Length: 197
Image (tube, rainbow, N blue to C red):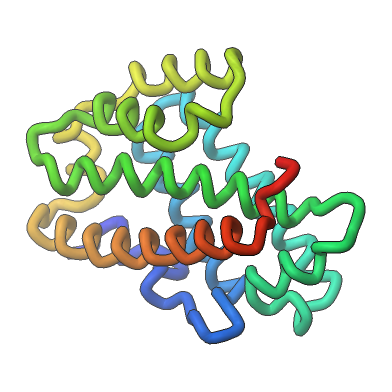
């Protein structure tokens, strides 16, 4: 019986990570799956999150296309852009990473707290992650989005009928995403790549 995670073109578990970093194309393909996950929330309010993620993915893909070998990993892509006046892909990846951290913290709360509703999980995750980077307008838009979350039960049903399998695959996918986000955060912080954004 198929679940949402079986339909992904690329799973975070399949994203190669080497000493050179996280493979750019598989990471972008796996992140397309997160953007689609917001469709299951069925709220127009989350289109802002989706369009933000899509815009940042485009910046990364555009940079990758300028030199596929030099930009084969996310880390190399950022380092190669370091001395440029406009670090478009570096900023795009930074904001994408922040969005993914917000999403992964909310989803982890859902998996770890079976009684917690989506609105609560996303609101708490927002407070822990993105809120400090946002101005008044973005904060307002996010508050609206959190209130528009579907019921937990409805969301999990959309992920698949076999709930045991859903939770199992969800956990594996999410753990892989969390590792990638943690790696990127460390890379940005230790290299000072987040400075100026």
